[in-house]
Image (cartoon, one colour):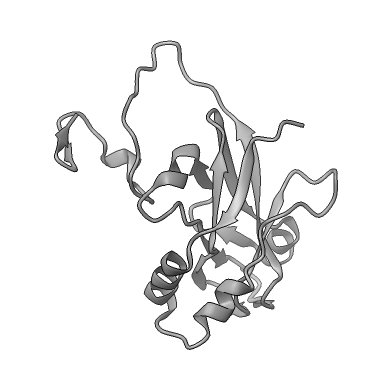
Length: 180
């Protein structure tokens, strides 16, 4: 196995900003931050790194929730982290990622939000089931995948943003005073 990445927490200030943006002000944000678990594999044969819920939550059928994980990841070039729901939750409750698969690019780590990974999950149950998870329970998993590029690829642009930021980088667009 190649060792190609390192998980770490975002700074407390970044987490606090993102948490308050998502859930509003809470008195115990510092405690929530201090109890965040770094993703890890359950067994030597596991491909997925489990992400753990920083809060207890319940999702009724059709409901979704955006979860700031407090986690970022430094990934070697040529690799990507793909985020999926934990298999058992998907099987039992049809828990899904709202965007089907989360893609964490290697350059997201240096983004202006410190590369903070958010997971938006949805209970897509058509059987009326409710998903209840306790704080600290695994709710999604990340799998590192190597990727390639085309022979004629000449991209030199760099990211500075989260969702949708790479699609905003089109020829002639002015970003941070520069045109490309």
